View 1: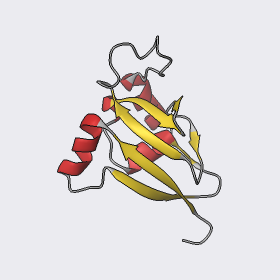
View 2 (view 1 turned 180 degrees about the vertical axis):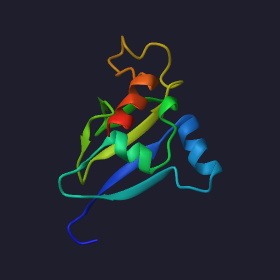
View 3 (view 1 turned 90 degrees about the horizontal axis):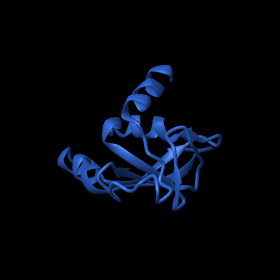
Length: 107
């Protein structure tokens, strides 16, 4: 895969189980083009249910679905149930599943 670097991807909670139940790795490395790829597109490629994603972290910092992920980054997809109902006050981006679906439709 010349010209492509890797991103490390982790999934937690029900997203971990979702992948594992389908015989898919809940932690993996994925090749990315040098210019990167949006977290939303990565989630789609992994088959993650967008309405179940509560937060995305890139290099241990909260990120949104539109965040451009670059080779060498580490990202984590966290379900809505983790870390709990205090996402906003703790500084975690609150992802609206309806907005996520609209973003997918817009491409």
